[in-house]
View 1 (tube, rainbow, N blue to C red):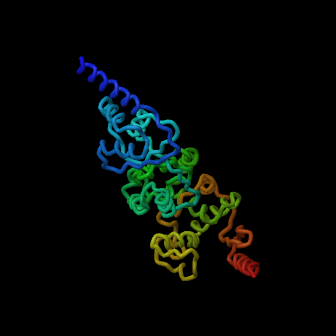
View 2: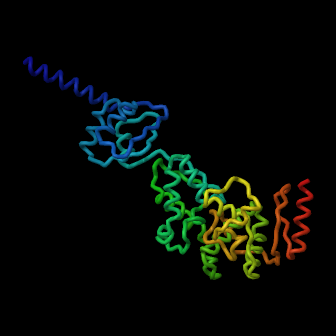
Length: 325
């Protein structure tokens, strides 16, 4: 009789403990990181130590029943959380997401810095894949890098996301957002890589929507006339590639021997020089019907002054210089 009473007491205490272990915990927004390669029991230990569950036992019981694979990563908990909620998050890999805003005109070097700052992936790892020719080839692109095809937008990535997944997400967004542009380009027989390259130069030259078709016209007119494009942002891109960009373009920089330097080499640069937005893509596809061959920017208004002759262009340059004084 004494043994039965003792057994019943132990069973009752155990039942109370298990019930207690499964009670929800109130959490005021907490982030917990589970390192890659962490054993399952250690994961339960971490969650208990961080106060996410009342007992390791609750998670262990759920794991014995479900036998799911738990994913490492960064997880966010807030409000009343039960062990079932916790286990579900880890088994489904519902990671904490970091907001990454890629602005129009950002190049792969800008994106690499941004991703590293947000803890999504290492910048050097992203650049290694973004400049690996096999990556664009896997998407059927003839360009040497993914520059230009990583659509500027707001993204949400978890910490330690593989760079290839980041690239894939951004490229698929490019495909989705540019359906109409690509359709019209195909109808006109304009190669996608060429279109995006022209659009990238337009994007870096001006943010004024009404100027974009005019910049596009200058680029195409100069190409037809077999003139060097002489686009400053291409030189800046060449300097960034070599790690020489100091934030200001000098006269000496225009002599840098690099295939992206359109002051030195004829034709379009080897790849786009940034990731353009839709308006620049449309401008590249629908240039203005003008004969302009030159432009210079007025630093006061940040507007461009266009001209058809070199003599007129020289006058515009002198005018801009006078306005600086």
